[in-house]
Amino acid sequence: MLDRNWSGLQKVLDAPSRQELIGRARTLKVRKGQAVLSRGEPSNEIFVILEGRLQVVLYSTDGREVSLRDLREGELFGELGAIDGAARSAGVVAAADGRLLAISRESFRKVVLGSPEAALWLVSRLTWQIRGLTDRVFELSALNVRARVHCELLRMARAQMSGVRHELTHAELASRIGTHREAVTRELKALADQNIIRSGRRRLEVVDAPALEAIVVTGLGAPTELEGGW
Image (cartoon, rainbow, N blue to C red; front, side, top):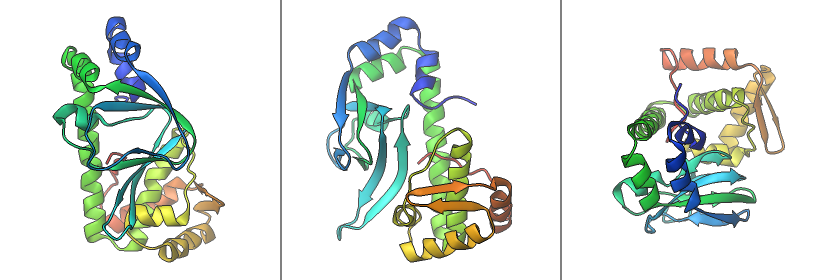
């Protein structure tokens, strides 16, 4: 499977192209709670997470937060603006202290347009995001809260298999699937009683992924192809 993160782009670039990206980039520190990007602001940089954890969020006019996904070390964001030059489509907030690598739009475009392999990497990444959006639109439109919780936990389980640990409150999970904290807490308790998950303070761990996947397959009526993109 193609690596869609920063390491994947580095693998397909030759040494001069890698230097073009990194040599002109700048490093910046972020503090927990800091808004790194805001929806609607101009797009002129792509960011790579060197350390820390960030959240992609949107806010309604009444201040309600909608969490789209977590971003972790080695992931990048902001590439959509590098492609079309449009304003940011979502906000990004630091969930922990960290460091970012900021790459100019011009350097990113020059490197990607100058390498067929890098262009294919970007197309693959965008395709992955579209598949993920398709999954989420279906879930929000057609599934009840219980099924949406199961689908999101299965995504987390697959990331967990790759070594990703999740620090997520019930309220953050509820925001991600379009419901309220009480509903999420109820469903997580039911899964914990079945020994499918373990839940603690800011910690969710799937301990029986096959059982969880079986529940999701039954709910969807088809094999699962849940994508992690957004």
